[in-house]
Length: 400
Image (tube, rainbow, N blue to C red; front, side):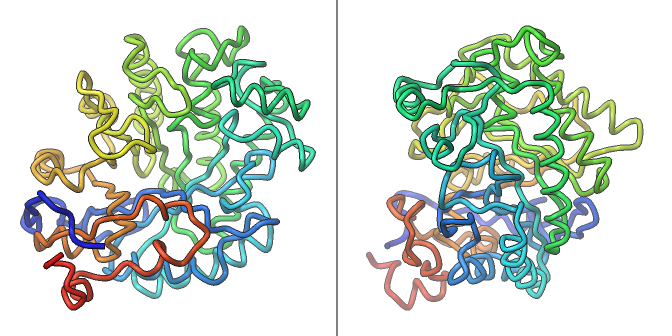
């Protein structure tokens, strides 16, 4: 792959992006973050991180000491999953493989946090039925689309709104997954409440049609996410917990900016987190997906929501904020964002293609193009074979 065309890099080494910061108990040497990136290389059955490639993948991206890496989403339990090639963190076999990955990251003097993931209705009803599992969401039969409804009907596994007891079981799964993460050697966990997955399905009225204490009002729709946060904090400590939101996201048929009342949902939940912080339980960070990326399956520039900003969060939440979403090609925007001293930047798709992206961003070096076709392919190609800048120059990528 050649370098990205029609892009003029800007060296950001003199900005706050390369100012050290403490996140939880980790002393980062800079503020470039590897955000969670699903890669679909885990092995089935068992949802085990890939024993041949995963250690090297994370090794390559943690070479710069003091880097914060957030893992690809890891299923908190079998019921929370349904993608055969995404990893879990509920079994001993999974934990043993994560141990090797985390040990390598720590050997590189970097830090790793596990993203805790539950799919809800973004799973596949037929895959779940194969394994004797429910097809869960906030409400009965509020399907994402006709294809998901057809899968559910054909497999006799209709979309199921969680009962209160089942919600409690999920919360226990989040807690156990957090404990398992630390047993494997992780430095912290990120609770995934974004991108249309289970917790996001409770936040959004497009998918949450409940009439009990988990639906209806803004306060009720936030209850499940806040209960998960509180339970995980009680189990492992607030300084080891972060949470991710996508206020403008439409992936998974979420409302995004089309619903003018939805921002109030996120203002409320951030206010609740800040209340907890003022009472002595401040989370390590809040991670926000930018309105530049409303759907991660679209290419850069497509699906941007230009009528909103995540800047509102700074007026409510007074802790650290990670911002991610099509920022690699917009260094001037990054400069403005990191002018606020509590901001970190997640570089996603370009961290896949540029294992040394921290150095490139610092020096203003060109980026390798990424190959979208290999994002989710069960191959080492497109996973562990992207060159560093120096290697790319030797390959003549700068001349292609």
